[in-house]
Image (cartoon, rainbow, N blue to C red; front, top):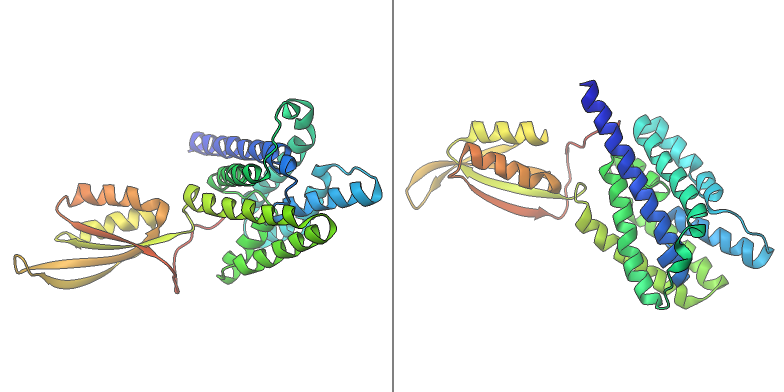
Length: 291
């Protein structure tokens, strides 16, 4: 058991380091080359840096600003969400700050980009990959993710509107102080990140399973063991053979569905399974607690 825990923690650290590295490389290549202002605390940090440099003539390192901005939301998540989850997320924030400040002296100067649209698109994809690494480590990349997780876990509400409003304020300030075109390209960057993230990481999406089977107890046991979700059964008649059949209805996380279907097929190879995307869900739905 201790060996499994050790490997799990090592896996989390490696994923967080990889995510932080990708985030830092992205900031120092695509983001800086395109003059983009990403959403969240990363964008706010870059905006503060630019304001200090342009209007105060003072260069402020990226890392200290990012860490300072994350202090309050990290403290809230540590208190109400999960201690290990918050500590690993803080590790991602600190590593991102350090790597962003020190990577330019290594190899970033060799990369030159001159197309802002390409910077926005490929930067958004790389940003989504970095965030996905942190999410797979059961952590976040910090910033507004702390706020999103807190609102979702504490109040069971969609936090997108709050995050979007904050990003809109950041982009409005950037557009008024610098240039409108950079703010508009930054919107493309954020849109690309959102679309790519929805493909890379699916734990927050749900799907509905409709399973017609002659072995409802065995199939239900598989669903329960694999996902910790419940199921509801309905009795019916298969019209082709006029035989009694059982319909099991269950909602599971989208990233669990392939494993669940494979396990169900081993129990009942003759079952019929219909997978439907769940657009909205209202009610009790099991979410794995943050550690």
